[in-house]
Amino acid sequence: MKICNLCEGQSKKSLNGKPHEYLVEIGELRIFKGQKPRRFKEQDYQCQTCQAKITYSTDSNNLAWTLWRG
Ligand SMILES: [Zn+2]
Image (cartoon, protein in one colour):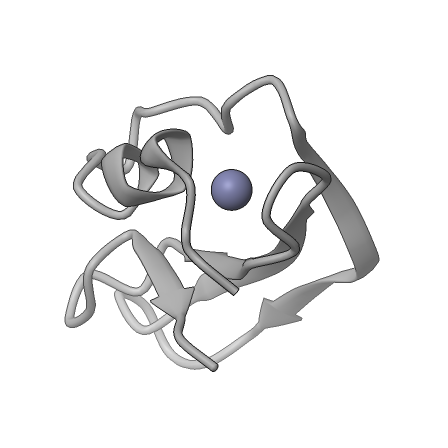
């Protein structure tokens, strides 16, 4: 299925970016308790428009919003 424009834009947002209006949280917030500064958290979202899944992560080594392509 085609990724919608909102999700394409979401994948380019920074850590401070908010999930777009059709993204709903799926699953639990995952908190990784490593040694500082290795602590981070992740949350999965799914788009109600295009069904794309996006994972938000505060792990500074990765992009904040990862779009999973089928
Ligand atoms: Zn979408």
